Length: 259
Image (cartoon, rainbow, N blue to C red; front, side, top):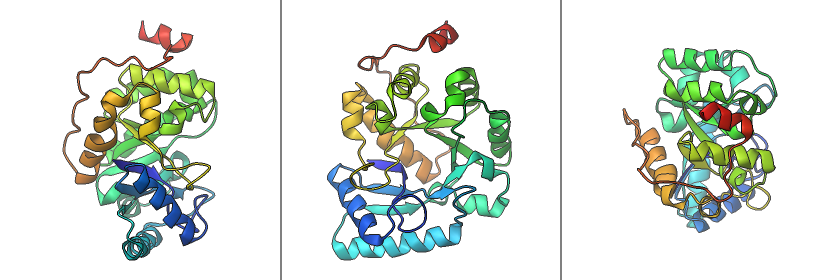
């Protein structure tokens, strides 16, 4: 599996504070079947990380992983807060992309009402970036306005939900919304968003099976992320598999939208 969203770098954000924590996270990832981690530290108003620092830490971590015999490869990336994206230069944005390609992992705000998110994302697209939206199922504004998310996906934005959301780790409302998005074909990737090896570990496969999405696991955790990292012009289409996640019952607002 390829984990496109993971806070594995030490001392740079709210992930591990020392490299021993990074090594423990990577060991846990390997034990859970993950062979590639994309390091996506926060780039936000709180964490003013830059591409040069991220690339250097990735190189140092990969060297330690090799010396420790941990068969996990770490690639550079970033989780860019939507509010910060417009303040970052074009060159720096490119360097903050996932694996050095065209795709940016953009984090929507955790607020109930947001204006201009769709405009901002589509503006980034118009400048040549491709957008992978981080954990939309945890954005209250998208709960209130799922039509915005549908519109963004129709314009080429992809979504990456957090595996823990499928298991209810962020609450029942988030779980229901995540399952509804998956059922409706609006999920393109599932990532761990791991921050350590215990409290928020790098686990994906177990959550997919528990949610009834195991038949899509190869597409969600390998085919789509591989295409993103390889710079493919197109993303592999979702397999024609009927999915009925366990306990999936779209919320009334989403249900009325789909009708």
